[in-house]
Length: 348
Image (tube, rainbow, N blue to C red; front, side, top):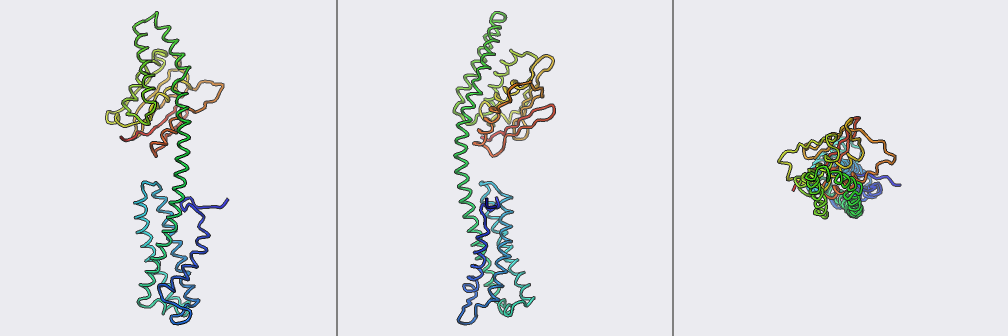
């Protein structure tokens, strides 16, 4: 496989191999009026001088281009990148061209170098250098944008496919038969012992599934609405586990209108219950809070001994849906005694 710089987007070795000699041939003819049949003659030393200058300026501007793309890699930063890149490249070109002329003129390596760089020749040389940098930037940017456009189309198609899988996985996660089975068992034990609590339990269970149906086609919802679902979901879990499950929610009011992916909190809560022991000896503590522009859900680790490994459907579901909405990633951190998931809060 041919190597390529990820910031260049293509293997530009062939371009430099042909581009530098061609520019070195064109510049003396177009900008200095050199000809093969009359003065000023197009001589070998002029070609070599131009070749050295074009090569050095090409590589200098190539470095500037790579650095600017590294500093501003996002598509939303294109204007800022192009502006900084253009100013830097023109500055480097003018200064580099003047320095190279001074060095070549002082060394007397070529017979006609001094004559070549006298008086107005430097102005013509700077014009030629600017022409070269415009050509270089135009070629590199055109190929780069074609490459990025191709990647964007491919990524969009990939995200569409992932979104379809995410929706399917969401259905598997959201309407969890095991979750429903456990709640029905809890309800059946509540009815004879505490009918009033049983009525409240049914109402909260109804609220959970009604919310699932309401947000089925939504890409994002206000955090406030998601917390209402979470409180209903916690009511069901607390009825089942009692004080063995402790949930602490600390979210400031100004964060409530920001948005998150629907059912993400319910999925994270369900994952914590699914993979950790919840008992009087080992209570499970789950904290929900905000940190900067992210919502953080963490729990103490007390993993169950499971025969089958986790499929990761819940977390993959959240990650895939966030790819459609935000450049910020969903981060998962696991330490010796704690498991933390951080999901971005989306601006309205």
